[in-house]
Amino acid sequence: MEPIRSVYEDDPDMAEIVQEFAAELPGRAAEIEQTLASADYNRLKTLAHQLKGAGGGYGFDRITEVAATLEEAVKSESGPDLIRERAAQLCEVLRAVVVGDGT
Image (tube, rainbow, N blue to C red; front, top):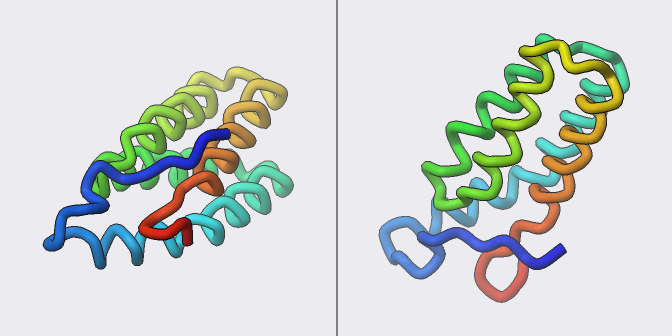
């Protein structure tokens, strides 16, 4: 997957908070995986919803898009296979985020 960067990365007023948000994303991916493993779909929906809102706010529209698909899959009770697929896609996107020199 191509690296995902914030549209605000070069904005001096946003750079620090974008960096802080990006630093949290691997932990959020791990939390999604753990939540999925325990089949806690209510928590999974909440995590997806939070990322859907935050992603765009920090300039990561791709996070918003993919988180929305996971949230919708859980809301519509699409079944465990589709939910797992959407969760895996979101985790992949979260882990593809880079800021600055690639960290």
